[in-house]
Length: 149
Image (cartoon, rainbow, N blue to C red):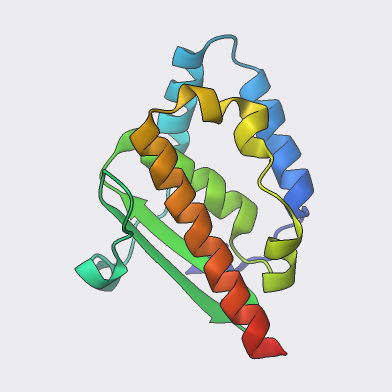
């Protein structure tokens, strides 16, 4: 697991700001799409045992495997997709939300989606997939919060 267990040095809000700033370097959407593809290629390889139907996320046009597990009081997310742009979206979500406490995850709205311009530049099916991934993260956080109380 290695790197994915190291606690982020930034808050969720700071990480969203970093991502918004990174996307701000690109003038047009072709460059932003290319950046999404590039960061998606760097996703850690999903362990084989998670590449099964039971871990497939519903609501995504492309195939997305998504796993969230509690490690101590933090949630570690792993995900993979067969689609390049979706892999980039996964990379962003993992950067923002993985290895956080449930209360951290639930306390910050995902403002980066509108701030980057994803809302108007993603196809409806990719937007649905992003929504399904976010929903899965929030549900896992709710579940973790309820277990802790």
